[in-house]
Length: 182
Image (cartoon, rainbow, N blue to C red; front, side, top):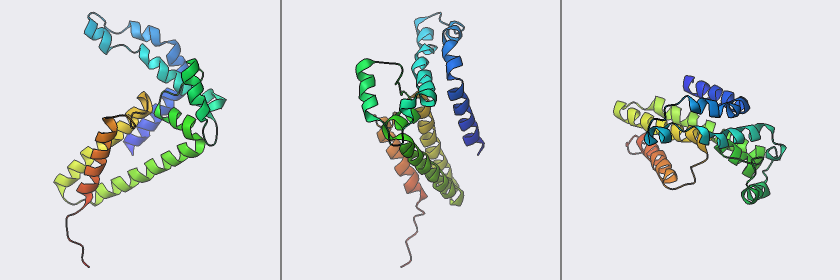
């Protein structure tokens, strides 16, 4: 519960403060070490501006606020390369493509899957299996959370393959291996 509370609070704070962070991104970037090319590449945070613009758009752009999405907006944005319609995070992409209904469905399925997964872990009595299930679930959650911050990558190879593989491993570890009594 603490993990989910902290993640949701941090994500909400990031979205609500996206304008402030966007204005101070250059200044924050100047404080980071850039003595070598490797450090300059590793500590470059100015590329995060697209995500911050996306967070601002999710909150303030009325074209994002539709019930069933606005697919034409995606194609207009690609053609015009406008910052007004940037959706560079998972929440924004779902909102643009499927609207509030799709976002609500996605969040509902995610919450239900997490409840079922945690219930399965708590009911697992074999400690090694339980640890492996926790490991699989941790990576699955980290993939979803990173998608919320850095753009939806569940549709991209190889992330989608590894995500499906870990979900399958989690499900197979949940099977207790006892034959069903008929």
